[in-house]
Image 1: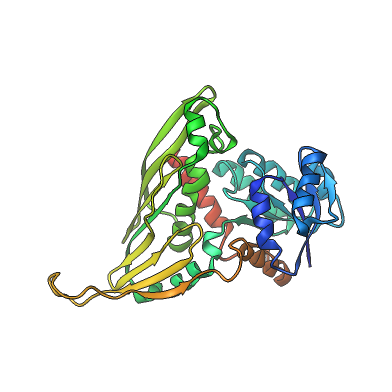
Image 2 (image 1 turned 60 degrees about the vertical axis):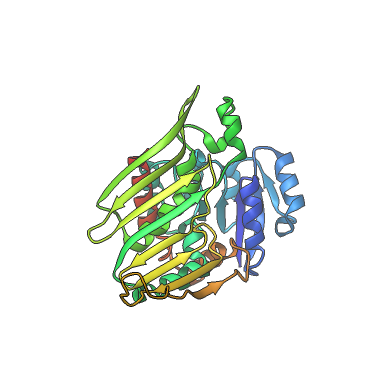
Length: 330
């Protein structure tokens, strides 16, 4: 059993507990929020947290011997401080994406994890999704890969408010914005699969606020020795384009990169000068048998049971490389 303390009682923590509840090894023994009232309301609406001890101090919560691990679902600018506090107290940490607001903070978190001997993992659901992993397992069939293109464009109801000068947490300059919120879903799998790119160029759109500029959409081009990648993200408009990995011998298609519910492979057609039949699509996997957030808790609990301090799928090196690229783009 892994006894969790939950830091943050906002919407994302509600979402992830639905997945955590599907793993019988997970128990929530503590909840930390800015106010007792918010923590009590969270416990009331999440049955997995029934009976949890309530805290308003992270330091006090991580001193609780009934807590083995901490999930951090608070705004990005708090990830570094709360993660290091938990690690220094000997607690494993599952930290919401992005791991930190920049690479410098990320490196401090990784160093703290390695000093402590505790597990630290970024809660990136894309790379743990079984439709993604089953598609990747067949990447050799389309190799060599020449292009990766990924989209996550989702209009935010807070965008209109932003244009009126009302800045929500998701658009807070310097700590949030579209790239850190949704663009990271397109970037993380790329780096997990192909490593650090040789070149990064990007064009982003920003909105000015009294506290500085914040990005609302953008496109990035990343170059590798023998392939390239294009990423498009937005909180100002929608797009329904899939994510595609294109190889000389075929293509892999994921309907959505953040929560892939369908994965397909299209074999390379025989040369016909464009006049022959189109190659057929084969569904690799479709649907998710369990809640999309279940898979990150399963990975985390598996690692603890195995005595491991790092995930192969969501490695700390990948998390740091992603933060370095975000720093370059922004």
